[in-house]
Image 1 (cartoon, rainbow, N blue to C red):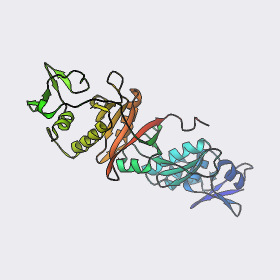
Image 2: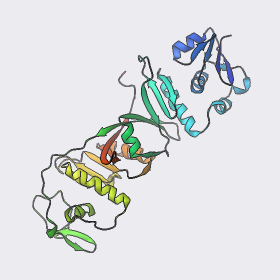
Image 3: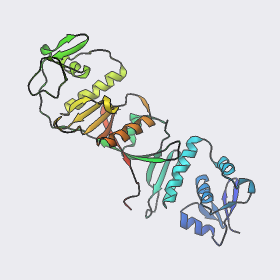
Length: 309
């Protein structure tokens, strides 16, 4: 009977299928001396789809064969996403937690898909360096979510003037202005005054206001950059983000939600922000320092990686 080999296991190929047939049909392994030489994920894919059977009966169970080839949770999650791609007929090879895949008519696996667990750590530097890119996550219930990243360039079209620092008054640790016609984009009304946010007050006064820390300084740096891009920048608190930003006017919906990444974050927080932004029809943008300057990366969900085929 024809055989397949994935060290240390040997598999039989049932029926009238040959090593060359499996190699060509499923785009796995390589044929050597009439044997199909497989990588662990390739062997698992063929086993779980009923194309090969272990010679040693001990390994003819889900638990035994997973223990033979899978080392830990990250490895298992990566395999499950590999299995998803292979089930779509893709050419796939593994490079750590990156799966290189080729679509059905591709000759080589050249498209990277980066695997992230729910609680995996992520930095803005990683997002910036790899964008544009594809990410995938399998949650604890086995559902797979796909994400696309891209460099972003949020730019507005507003032409507004900021009031001078002499117009700002402090009371109770907060900063206020008298109402100014045409400045509805600034602050919020309280009694007969306009209550400024800490970011707005800091921008006008040119100094720190309220409590400041590394995260706050990073957020303020992004705020200043967004303002310089002629965007109206408001709090994004109710959307779970640092800011929401309008390109033209607050009479329309904010186009962007911006989350500032000052250090290491967890992937589930990124996923949560992206899902929420889809629900409110806004672009989710992550901001941070890269190559000595503030840059932006957008992340969106992909409902079907293969819908264009």
